[in-house]
Length: 264
Image 1 (cartoon, rainbow, N blue to C red):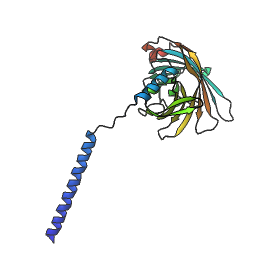
Image 2: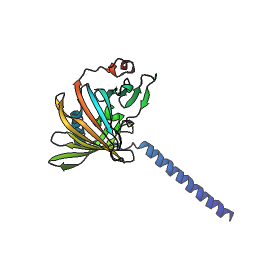
Image 3: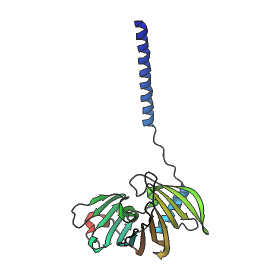
Image 4: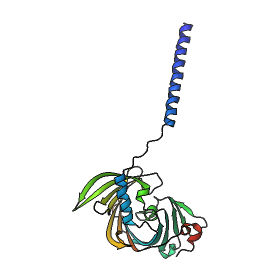
């Protein structure tokens, strides 16, 4: 009886060590196996890059933006900003109205964002996805670089009215970007952006955007009016109007903390 017990215990022990060995072996293989690499869609990327250039110049530029936000049953609110941008990775956003907030400046370098306030000695770190005003996030003004922030995929073609559009799915390269997913309509014949849907990490539709009122600014037709509508709260929207765009030679020193006090 004792021999049988010892033998059973030995069998159980052998099975236990075998299971441990198998677990460790699998874990080791999992560590050695690199994570899957996202397959780039060159056709979709080309469309997104061209649409980015329709929206904004590749060179350094300045543009003024008026944002009118409305909520059901409330008076509309108007805020004004001046944006200096270089290569879509260096941006300064200055509040020009209301007068009580003049002097507040948002600085973006890469995907890092800070706000500098006249009465606060140290800059405050912000997220691109954090709300700036109304339906507008910090990243909507500071970093509108879809090609660099998302992995695009062409979903389908879609006809709306008399026009045919590429419909693309843009998946964020990481969690630091403004939205985790964008569904983006771009007109096929000229790569004009038409509309976009912005989604959260949980795949919840946050808001929609229409690109309107194309006018010539700095050598090409660009959307000068964006209408952002809250997808969850009826009657809430923000209208962004772009004007006075001009190319500017913006040296790197402009996008530094020490230089911000010299901006006007």
